[in-house]
Image 1 (cartoon, rainbow, N blue to C red):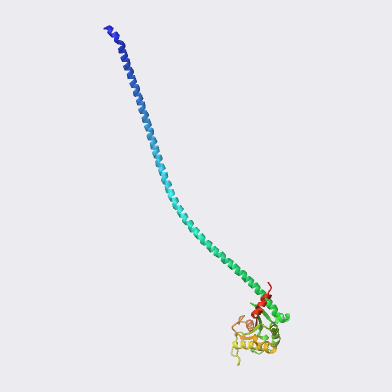
Image 2 (image 1 turned 90 degrees about the horizontal axis):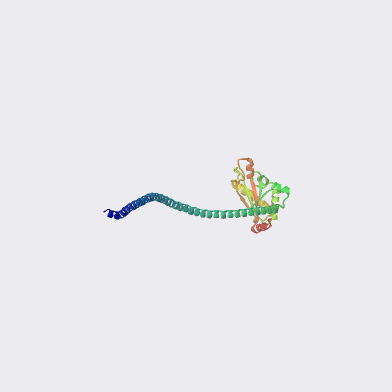
Length: 287
């Protein structure tokens, strides 16, 4: 028995050793599984944390995207509004450009018209000067002092006070008239193709004479006296002469003063060149 025990002892020891080894191996495996589980838990925790962070980042990104989309929509609205304003401004600008263009054209036309008027005025002044010189060359300087000669628009106006021609309150020619009318006759004779209008004017004081009804009569009778005097004394062709009266209705001064009345009591001798003579004078006018 002792012999059998001895022979079985190695086997028992081997089995015991194998069991112990097997037990040690299971414990190591358990420890390994436990570590793996812990690692999995840690990884899961990290993944959950990462997921939460990512989820929050996604939400923040979506919020930013929404804000950008809102900004983009507002920007589109602003752009549309600006585009409409720009189109309106361009339309107004085009209209203004048209108006400015029209205004420039009008200004240019006005400038041309002004230049034309200046040229006409210059030509007219030159013509008047020529006509005055031609019509007064028959008179001396002393004679010109007694005769007021003006040229307006190519027409010669010779104005004489009533006391130079007529008796007071009358249409009869006085003695002094011969000296005065002789000077006028020189001009008329020198230019035989010119027409002559003698025009009588009075103040507003009513005339009271048996053979003169009013100032109309007086002005016409005075003009007629001058015309007949020029015809009979100086041989002026009566076809060139016209007599007319304007009474008190063509004053050149106020009738409220004696000086004004004296200026209004006048006889005008108006000498007008005929068309062909007028054109010749235009050709003579200096540039």
